[in-house]
Amino acid sequence: MEELQIPDKFKRGFEQLVSIDTTTIEKLIDALKQVSPSLLIEDLASEVASKVQVLTEEEIINIIQALISLYNFRDYSGTSIEKLIQGISQAVQEDEELPYISEEEKQEFEKRLAIFLEFDGVLSVTAKAIDVVRDHERIFTGSRILTDMRPIFGSDLETSPTSVAIIHMLKIEYLDLEGKHEFFVALDSMDVEQLRQQLDRADRKAKAIGLMLNKANISYLNYPNVE
Image (tube, rainbow, N blue to C red; front, side, top):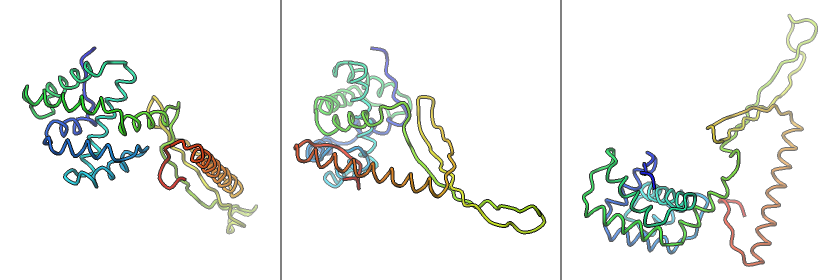
């Protein structure tokens, strides 16, 4: 396996996995065994933090993101857990932006990683669920509707506008392999109503599917406030 390099956004999580004490690690593992998978890491971290108490939500988010990155890398690369642990621990030890860790700390870090990676629980399911939801050519990241008035003039441009047209500009933000993008679509009042009906219909269909799965006793993940 090629030498691993740790992306900046995961460094804080791995640093915490090295530095926090054994008792806290045990509390974290116990908490993860008690919570359910979630599509939102922030919600999962909040639930875990309420049980661990000695770690902040931000610290737990960092740790979860770092561990999920390992689950994803393992699934995509087919690397064995043993080789992955060796590779990431070596990368942590050699990263100049991370605090120095001794050989003893490195061995303890590897033991901790083994526990998390061999624990096929909430983090593994969460990692796979997030991957499935986001496995598309383009991913919606945000939207905004800007509303403005456009004056309509008569033949005499020296006089006031005869009327005003109301226009909505829908901004869609999305992500693909090339990065972040956005585009704008003009809407009138009929377009807004049609869009609202389509969104309401999608919501009703999602709820119907959820009811069907509940009756079949099949668990499923969804975002908060969507039943």
